[in-house]
Length: 283
Image (cartoon, rainbow, N blue to C red; front, side, top):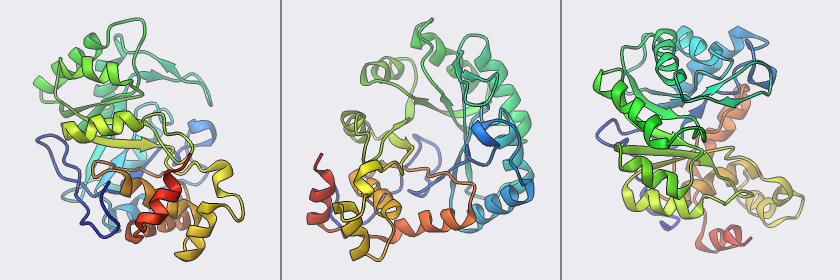
């Protein structure tokens, strides 16, 4: 783990672009239950433009966010895209209603990628990720479908999401995997070993739900005391902890609120001491 004053490395997506260490997750710009359009399209577009204007160079979305609405809004707000901005998308989940998600990596992947390209107004998606492993088929077949899309020039880099260490190992035998996107936060550290594997392999680790804190954020908790010391919020300290956790960490806190976005960005400037990191590392 880098020290509190160590220089911050930027994750490089394989042979692809280098992006800043704090991205933006575009799941929450849709309607309730990640379904349908947002309550106020104008606010969502203003937020996305603020994200780009703030220097964020990585936006993560998926065809299933909305479905389709997240990608459509990104293009409506930001196309033609600023130089250096990487839009990452995912395929492999289908939706039939709010809160309902179904893994489907059979014929869905090729169709999902084509629709994402159309909605995002792109000829090639810089990072395209397998959204989840379809247990009805070998992961090698799903990654193979992405390799075909890569050869056709429709995607540049391949990532995976919701995988185990064993599944990542199998995927890496089929293609160069440049990113892993799994749940990780102060409460959920089940991917800790996988983060270390990513660091050893030069693979970016993209934690989703990075702000989950639960009981750790209760008044007078260690997290709350550290936040008070830094004149920050517990959410900002949770993000700063992730950035300290590994140089390959690329958190993507998502929000539909401009105020929350600006709060999240402030976490990048927080430097935690070795003692604070030890305190937060305790279970």
